[in-house]
Image (cartoon, rainbow over all chains, first blue to last red):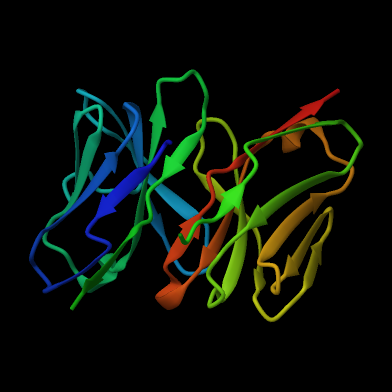
Length: 116
Length: 110
């Protein structure tokens, strides 16, 4: 159990376009979902935390108008990178925490975004 | 399947050594990582090991890699209460994409 999927796994887009990444908890209800950005050989950087039905909480330095997060249901959160630029190219990982009373986060497999 | 597997829980006494184990399945992994996550915080990269190494030591941390068995371990010497956290192992596959284990919750008892 506790499977989290992300779609797409890879995406290549042109500069200036917007890209939506989906994160789904497949077999549990995710009351909280997290979006991370990962740079090679560096720590994952937490971008934002979202709770179902409420606005996401963004970490300092993360532009909320650029990285739109929607957590519309207990099994789905989306991250939209608006007006993407090459510097947005990265590996984006979501994780989900259920309502089982533990802090365990279950991670998605990640999405590799390449902006040309 | 291609999974990274870890046991979910480990409990030790303060001052003892902790050993967290991980198995992975992708033999083409280039780097293997250990991340630490404290409550309410993002993941912190603790250490990583290149796949052509079999051991790496960094202060209280020792990473052992058995590539033949695809087994990775993290040993924390003289475990302290501040080490209580969730530890994730992860493998870096092609193009730096990463695959994570579910995390091991380490509880350190005084």
